[in-house]
Image 1 (cartoon, rainbow, N blue to C red):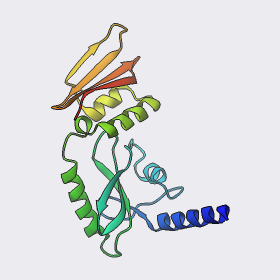
Image 2: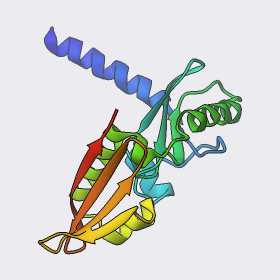
Image 3: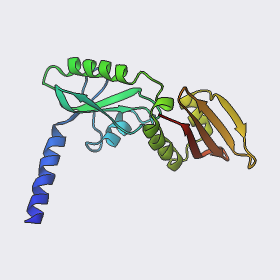
Image 4: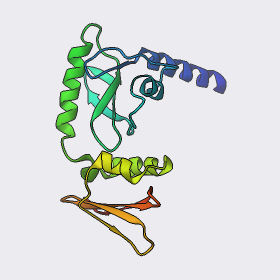
Length: 179
């Protein structure tokens, strides 16, 4: 009985997911590449990009919508969702307008939880100081500590984030302040 319930659950989930489609920001269908996943779409259509965790958007006419963004930003790259046939472009434009209004603040300074995930992911992927500078821009301050680690400090109204590099690679971070 337990196996039957699990099988039915997996069948329902896979059926639901298979109806979702990947779209570019203009509402055109994307090639899903070698599979039907966020990673396969990224590899096929945006191989140069590094993605942040998915950002979910609550939009009443399109329940299962996910906007995938560039790492350390709320800059959308593509969308996963299910939209009324023939109205995909209209719905995607509306969703992106709502998304941009809700996330107009500085992602890096104002969204601590997502920043932590992105920084932990960047540490795991061995991000370089040049990669971080390219993504985040010039820090508020930079200096070296007693162990010759390079530290980039980004300051906002509510918090400061110190990003610590050892031998040119992201090694750690510290977040001060908060809500």
